[in-house]
Length: 268
Image (cartoon, rainbow, N blue to C red; front, side, top):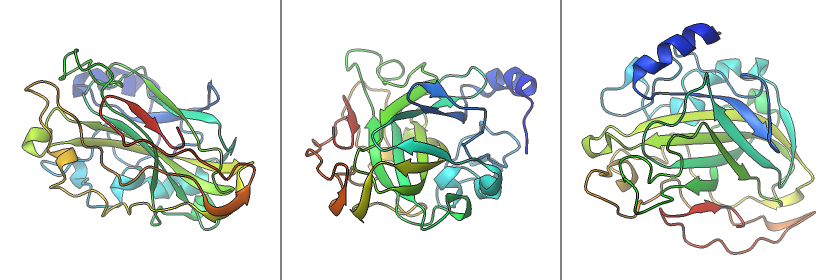
């Protein structure tokens, strides 16, 4: 389904801060609208995924949580962007919107066994970046969070990633309703081909989606209305480097335990 930019721009302000990702960014350059990002089939693409009172019956217990509802149907018509390992990449929100909900952002990779255009994302998802709170003295309901009011997120791909095709997944989690089991998930996936990385090795542990997020997880039942407290990031361990591989860079520095007051990246 294609969306009129004018129509979306007119409607988005009425949906109380909802948004969706439409552009991949590589080394500071924005790519085209949905050029490399899989397109959802949702009639209102900015609607979140959530467990309680879901819209279009889209919950984190379904495949929707990978790259958004119906996104695999656009995989074949979505481009694959060649990206060098270690590149700075990111995503931009559509039609002039910004992240209007408090909460963290996370990025994952999932390696396709062959062509990413034929990959559903049913393999492991490995977290490579996360960001939470940037200012503990600010309003925990709004601008304490690093992504508040931002329309883009950027981060570095690990330098030693295995060469090949991947889904690169971005996700923002709105926590304004998390105290009432209504955490909101805003995921999207870009199709990329990594070059200049490692030729062999193991990417390490990841999570499955769906399955890796549980309705009872503290990450999704988190109160923001009584002042700052550390946020327990979801998504399993951070990527720690290729194990037993060979390539341009097979070493990775230890990753410190993440806190909600920092931005953590694999190999940082």
